[in-house]
Image (cartoon, rainbow, N blue to C red; front, side, top):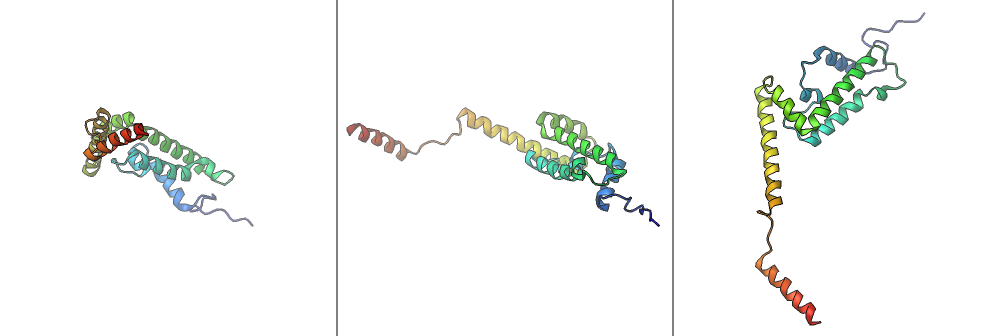
Length: 160
């Protein structure tokens, strides 16, 4: 006599913690921020966002569970992966991320607002540093001794 699968396992090959995560993804729907979806803070840089996306996408990608019995969780895996991909697409593009941040700012907690401000100020300082370097105002200058060595080297080479 065959036994029926228990509701906890659901007759799937997915680990129970992944099943719970997928149910949670489905339950929160659109109420979760893209930062929370990827598990990063609003001040995370592009590399951190990319690493978080790659880690989560390996876990939730439907092809990772190919030829496994996913049962009712197949569509949930697909939706979770699509949400992760959309979140990464927005957060990896600076213009789209800035627009998302403006919309999200009203919903954020104080901690998340501070993190967003830190990221924005860091981006401004990076842009300012690159602009100063491009204009040459802060380019490293040769020391007086190095200029003398250069000119004497030129003279010596012409004497030969």
